[in-house]
Amino acid sequence: MFIETAHPNQTKLRRSDMFIETAHPNQTKLRRSDMPPRWGLKPSRMVVGYNHAAPTALDALQTGIDFMRSMRFIAAKLVLLERTHCLLLLMIMQSLACPKVANGETNRIAAGTGFVYGDIYLKHHTGEGHPERPARLTAIVTRLKQTGLLSELVAIKPTAAAPEWLVTVHTPAYVERVRKICQTGAGFVDSGDTPVSPESYEVALAAVGGVLAAVDAVMAGKVRNAFCAVRPPGHHALKDKGMGFCLFNNVAIAARYIQKQHKLAKVLIVDWDVHHGNGTQAIFYDDPSVFYFSVHASPFYPGTGGVEEKGEGKGLGFTLNVPLPAGSGDAEYRKAFVEKLKPAAAAFKPDFVLISAGFDAAQNDLLGPMKVTPEGYAVLTRIVKGIAEQSGQGRLVSVLEGGYQGEALAASVEAHLRGLKE
Ligand SMILES: [Zn+2]
Image (cartoon, rainbow, N blue to C red; front, side, top):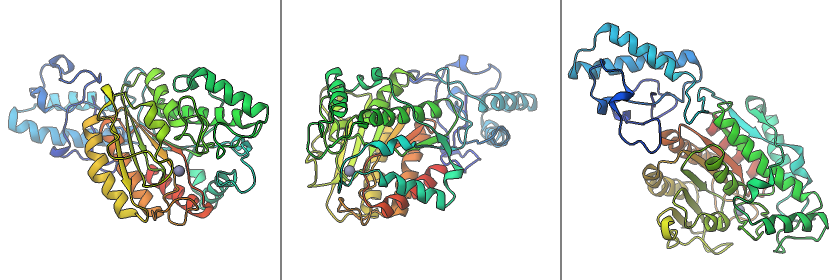
């Protein structure tokens, strides 16, 4: 059982916030057995869940008290709730608002934002003049140090992902081919724009591993959400083909990991990179358990992502593309998120949200033709965070994709992280 409010800073439950959430995703109706028999409240009036926004047990208690006040107000109209019942309910709310066990593993009291980074990510070399270069991450980390934000984040160190997770998305033959190309120094994987160096395979495993570590940290309640400053990026990578600077599809693998390792049913992927994530879309095109939303420049590389691409078979309706013309900025992006993403996410009700967070739609980016400002990214962050909190208990992991102008990238990431941390 829990209390959930619309905004993390909102500690008092309003009538409009009330909804029913059950212990199991497939259980849509509240059972009488879920509640003690003498509360005198109709089950449809009961709010079940816990306050994931409460950063401490004390806050959880305070929220429980506020909840009690709300409940007494409502209960007064239904049946008189006796003082002893109120105290009993408060005790139960307090214990349940503290470490909550959902699917056997979640403790949602943690308040911090995780930051995945390791110097290993600098060892993937793409050659002179390539925009996807180690300096991208250096610019981010330098900025976060200068502003003091880095010390406010929870450091999550990457380890290499086990190859068994890569093959939940990629073919074993492709994984082996990438390994061999890197180790034999053959130059590039499948496409001339995706060069590799001898260490690139290990770096790519660490990129996937970093994202999976972030998922684990969120699921274990060590952090509330996390951002992964990883490279190489992933959203163009197909199950058997590398392209667009991407080797392994970090976000797609994380979605499968969330489902298989952590037993959560539905994952929403929000892709705001300026390029359409053709790889991610293709991987989940016929899969109704992963909703793929992309907003991107069009016409633009890689040429996919039209509004008519909506999924196929059982996955029809679980892909949503919003192509935008060059020159679009904060207003157009916000409109797409409010008018397209929010209703779709409300209907889908994700258990976990992943962001393919490219910042190449930023103003002044070297590749993207858009004009999104750092504040614009903060606004998008808040919207996606709200979606995660609405149905996924706040579970959110954001993963770096593109972003090719150091200063614009660093400023955008900082705004994004501040939004995650709020
Ligand atoms: Zn991109």
